[in-house]
Amino acid sequence: MHSARPWKDPRTGIYMLRRRIPDRYRSVCGRTGTAVKITTGTADRKAADKAWPAILERWNALLAEWERALNVVALAPDRAGAIAAGWAAWIAGAAELETDGATASDFEDYTPGAPVHVRPHAMARLEYHADEALRLAGTGITPRLGRCC
Image 1 (cartoon, rainbow, N blue to C red):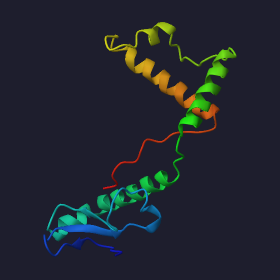
Image 2 (image 1 turned 90 degrees about the vertical axis):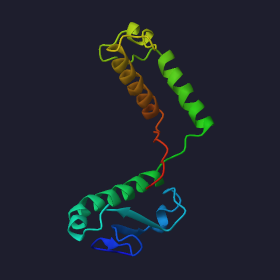
Image 3 (image 1 turned 60 degrees about the horizontal axis):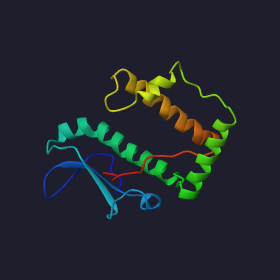
């Protein structure tokens, strides 16, 4: 189903990209069918040709997302516990946290009523340290992949 140009759906007259989902991505794409259709949103050939580069970019983005999903390593509860234990030991060993100028009060004030200027900085530091903990444990996490199309 390779098409170098938009394909015209005979039922609707709308031009679209129609591609077969490669077998290697079937388990991660979140679809039950074997093909993907991405519409140009138009029945006009010239407009479809203008939209075509963006449609191909969407297709390539899907392929890249599926490829990333194939490489995700699941974080099982026992592995998560080991990471937490390692991180706690690292902190207990008097390892210093990189704070980027944040003080303990920045984190204490991270409540729903905290000043708005404190929240983004405190959250950024928390995310940094969560990533740091995973790096020290020799692993990483990736958000769960949703529907592919």
